[in-house]
Image 1: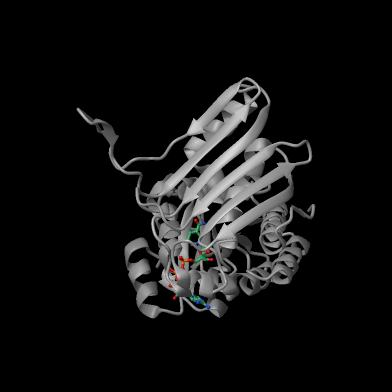
Image 2: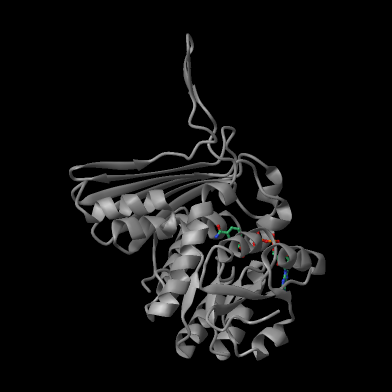
Length: 337
Ligand SMILES: NC(=O)c1ccc[n+]([C@@H]2O[C@H](COP(=O)([O-])OP(=O)(O)OC[C@H]3O[C@@H](n4cnc5c(N)ncnc54)[C@H](O)[C@@H]3O)[C@@H](O)[C@H]2O)c1
């Protein structure tokens, strides 16, 4: 395949669910070329390259190609830390899916290695790039609700994931709450300081047997006493429920769900609308595209990606405190990054 030297050459690691989402986003970015795809599953790898371009490659081939200046890590969570360290050593910019790892020390040591290498790094907290949440953020900055005081987030998956995923993902808090603490702290413009959380297994006893919870309520505070409430569940009978509200001194901003259709039915029993979109891949389709676009624009502009090492550390410390509070039943202080 002929190389287009004017476009940034990129390697994608992992051709699974989120790998395909990133490949689709890359195909829409004019200045970026998907050069290589690496996946231990050859069939998946070939299916992705035949649809979106690029060549199947090994890790060594990607590392050796000096034309490749950036990598997207979309492999399972337990591979991220090692891949980050390897590519940081080679001086390649890194976009990595969340979470970095399920082990605190591995997260911190790999982030340290990335920081010391000086390579640009972005973590996949794509909610910040969702156009609706971004509009809320901009309107807070514009002063439309005065001083923001409280954030409330509802994050409910349609159905519990397979038990293997529960184990590999590090559980509900690392998988789901990590997104929400990042979103809340970004909207409030403040670091989170304390966490109080209570989790239950109400939906699937196998999740409890795997040492996790499937239902969670969290309250967090910032240093100035601003409040965050997060309600999470692995089940939502009415579709993927993703609502956010920010209360301020002079008003409120609310983001409802994106629905499958805009048609509203009215009848003698009342009004009814379509269900929310069923899955995160559809609900956050725009956000996945805009997050990668921002990553590559930040590389061109020489600016720091919006969700980098510092934000990754903050999310780690907040989720660790949520887990500690669940364990002890007491409010936990969040270590400051
Ligand atoms: N930001 C988000 O909203 C979001 C959404 C989904 C997944 N994720 C994250 O993305 C990562 C991948 O999740 P997924 O749902 O796409 O998983 P997946 O299982 O669908 O895909 C992972 C792919 O990686 C391949 N793979 C496994 N080990 C490998 C290795 N050592 N080298 C190369 N390829 C390997 C597998 O064959 C598979 O094709 C996870 O860390 C997950 O937390 C983030």
